[in-house]
Amino acid sequence: MILAALALAAQSPDRPHQEIEWRPVTQNQFERVSVAPASIERDGDNRSFLLRTVARRSASGAAMNVSRLRINCALNTVTLLSLTDYREDGSQISFRETTSEERGMTAFLPPNNPIRNAVCSP
Image (tube, rainbow, N blue to C red):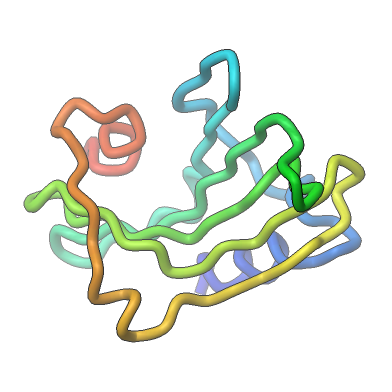
């Protein structure tokens, strides 16, 4: 329920991310990545959550995206569930949910990955 409300807030073109509390996870010269702690839903070894990435503007004009991800903490895998891109002014460029076929594809996360640690820690 909380995740659905946060996902709707994250998709709103008028207020894409201002109402969500973001906790910084990692940063480098190209991007800043944060997790919304209130969005973390636990289901056994799985954690679904919102992740925000703020980066230099891309060719499409995107300066930020908010993705909904699922991490399996035991298997160290991550699956993209949805992705919303925003311009620097906060206006929404696009929103896309992944297909069931795409959700079958997972990527490996090293056990010491800072995003995994932020979401899978007790």
